[in-house]
Length: 567
Image 1: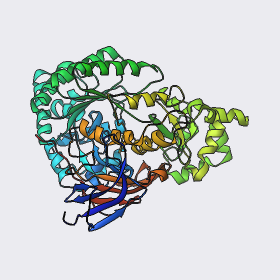
Image 2: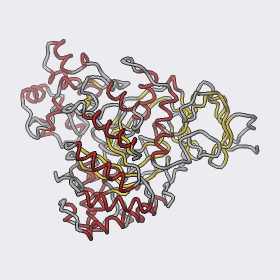
Image 3: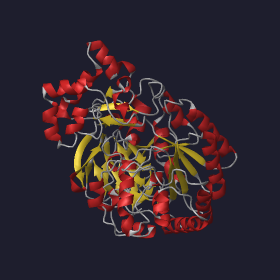
C-alpha cells in the first residue's frame, strides 16, 4: 500500500455492523477507507486513537436545515455531535419549488411549523432558485462540514401547483395531481432521496393557518406514490396525529404498496393515549411481515420544550405583566424581571390565552434542566415537588430558578414519550426491529428546543449512563446511528467501516463523552437567536477523509457536499 492520506492508529473499531468491537489501525486514501488492520504504512496525517472508539459517522435522517444550508457552511449542532450526513426537507416543509410571489407564504409556513423567525428567513434566504432541481443545484454549489441530502416537500409542491387553493387546503383536481406527480418525479430524478408530507394539526403557519397538506386526499398521495414507483427512488416520510389511527395507518400501508417504496412515520407516545404507539407499532410490524417496508421514526428521548426568559417560551408568557415586556430586548427585560415589585405582580396573575400554551404551567412535569442536562428526571425533582418541600408556590420556585445564571437558566418540559415519568417506553421504541432513531429536528424550533444532540444522547445515556434500567451494547447504538439510517435512505456507500466505503468517521473518547447544557447564540441572519448544544468527547469527526472537527473545534475543512439520488 502506498502512503495513506490519514491513518487512525490503535483505536477500538466499532464498525457499524453491530459486531463486537476490536482493536486495529485504519487507513484512509482518496476519501475512502483503504484498509483496516494489517501492516499499514505511515500516513501523511496520523491520529493516535489508543483507548478511543473509532466509529462510522452518524446519519441524521430528520433535520430542517433547508434554510441554514443556503447561508451557512455548518450543519451545527448536528455536525458538532458526530453527524456526517444529514437529511433535510422533512415534514412536508421547504422552499422549493417556489414561484417568486410565494416566498412570503413559504416563510410564513416555515416560521410557524418549525419556529424559525421570519426576519431570519427573509434576510438569509437568497432565493436563487425556482424549481426543485434549481434548489438542489444551488446547494450543490456550496461546501459544508457534513454531507446533505434532500426531500421534495409536499407543502411547497402543493402551493406551487395550486396557489391559494393549495394553501387553503382545497381538494386537488386531476390536473393538479398529475402536475404534482410530475414535479415529484422531477425532484427525485434531480437528486432528492425522498418525498415528505405532514398530516398533523400541530403544524400551522405563523398566522395560524393549518399546513396545506393536512387533509390531502388519498388520490393526491396515490398520484405522488405512483411517481415514486416509476422513478424507483426514495422514501415517503410522513408525520401524522393519528387521531384516526386505523384510517391513517391503513392509508400509509396503501402508500407503501402503491409506491413500492419505503415509508417512514413519526412515532411518539402521547399522554392522552399512552399505549397508542404500541398499537401503531404492531400495525407497522404486520405490514413488514406482509412484505411492505414501513419504519417508525423515533426519538431517543422525550420531545421536549425548553423554557427560559431568553427563550421563546417560559412559564409566565401567558400572564399580562410579562406580555407587556415580552418584546423588549433581553437585557431590558431581565432588568425588569429582577424588580421585586414586578416579580410579585407576575406571580399574582393568572394565565391568559391559548389553552394548549398553558402547558408551560405544568409544574409536576417541569424540571430544572441541569448541567449536564438530565433528560430522564425523577418525579421528586419536578418544580411541584421542590416547591412542596420548600413550602413555596411552584411559580415562585420557577421564577427564581429562571433568574439564575444571569437570567439564562432553563427549565425542561417533556411533552411526549414521558407519560410514565421515565424513558421505559423509549427503550422499547428504539429497540423495535422496524424503528429508526431520528426526529432530532436540527435547524428547527430554534427558540424552544435543541434535540439534534439525540445522536450523542443515544450513545451516552443508553449504553453507559442510564441508572433506571438495562443498557444497550455500544456496538448496537453505533449501528442504529450509522448503518441503519444510511441504508434506510438508500445510501450504501457509508454507515460502515469497511474498505472501499466512504471515509466518514468519528473518533470518540467514550468515557469522557458528556452533553453540555444548551446555550443561546445570536449567529443567525439579522442577529437571530438559536439554541445550540455541544457534546464533549468527540476527538475527531471526519468527512470524506478530511478532519472537519478536532476536540470540538472546526478545522476549516469543508468536504461536505450535496448527495444526490442515483436516478
